[in-house]
Amino acid sequence: MVTFKAGVHVTLRPGIADPQGLTIERALPALGYEGVSGVRVGKLIEFELDAADAREAESKVRGMCEQLLANTVIESYTWSITGESVDGAKEGS
Amino acid sequence: MTARVGIVVFPGSNCELDCQRSFDRLGARTEFVWHDDRALPDVDIVVLPGGFAHGDYLRTGALARFSPIMHAVAEHAAAGKLLIGICNGFQVLCEAGLLPGALRKNEGLKFLCKWTELSVEVPGTPYTARAERGQVLRVPINHFEGNWYADPDTLERMRAHDQIVLRYVKNPNGSLDGVAGISNETGNVLGLMPHPERACESLLGSEDGAVIFGSMLDHVAHLRATPAPV
Image (cartoon, rainbow over all chains, first blue to last red; front, side):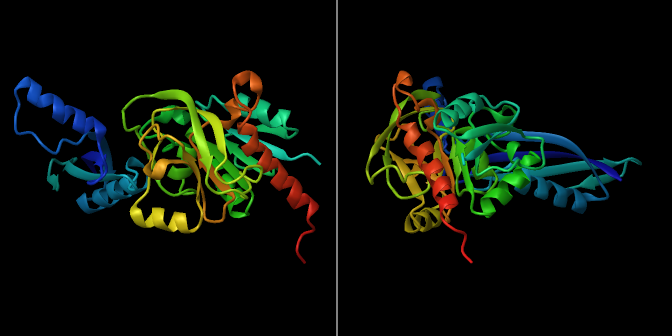
């Protein structure tokens, strides 16, 4: 069994208006940061997860995203998984 | 016989007493159902009231849809019985897949607490039988995530099936197509952001909410008076 570290990013789907992102995008030039576009505000959900291997961990994380972590009607998600087995061997993707 | 109304109470619900008072005043018999129960009592109508079920953590309604009672609520709806979700209850129904679409943050990123006017787009449903097409109902809203969305194909299908039951006369929150309330395809499940239970007596400034609740009670009474098909 390996303990993985997972990070799930949830944002509004492309094409769905993101008023928070838009407001930030409008605020940045006022601070002198020109050339910023496509600001999207989302959530980062981090957790640790026990799984036999990276493949199983990925499958679990995908299931969590579809069932709970994201509402796919309006949100899309990406995730990253890194992990080390108890004997220290590197796992992950 | 009086209609029986089960009002589901989640941790964080806060409109259940208003719903109870409104249905009681209209002659129904109400009872509360705790979210952790697995079975519904023998009821004709289920109400998912407004509030902040499970703190609205993660997303509005996201956790409430996994409350143990929701299995029985889905079965109640599948049997064709009336199920209404008000405000947070509407959000729960969308998360649970019992109604299409999802509720986004209001377009202006403001919590809105104000009176709105709703146009009855589809009369003759179990929720609007006491209204005429285009009749305007004055009912308040009180939400941050009331900006309903569905993809274009879903919206088209819903229009074709007369599922856009209530529209705002003046869209307060950016809701797609001005949607204030929608039904499922069979018409027995309704979700709406405005609060009819806060507009059921003149002291509160409007009795128009009673048009919706009264229609529901009429529907139940009508079903009882009609012999079951052989």
